[in-house]
Image (cartoon, rainbow, N blue to C red):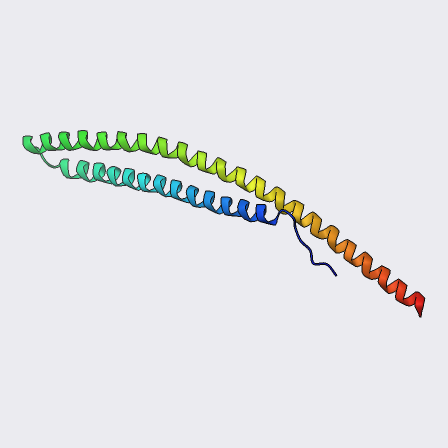
Length: 138
């Protein structure tokens, strides 16, 4: 009995390798987004803390310091928002690459599964033919 052999197995293995690599790249891109979002949340917390602490202060130097700190935080926030927009573009590109890899892999897997089913049916047919032949000889 011949063993099943999928002729495109090496290509399927390579496509699976590409898919794993694309998954890794997407994970990295998502991690960058998460890091930027965490930095944005930290800035938001600093705004809240600064506003709470300045409500009770009427010192001119404190007010000037708060204003300068607010400007710095706004600048940092704007820079992070730009980085986040860029990171989202990269993430979407990585997601698109992964989708394409998954399509290619899925197509080959379906072909392999179809060929395996056909091989199994052929093997069962051969076995049935062999059994009939043995029965007829008896």
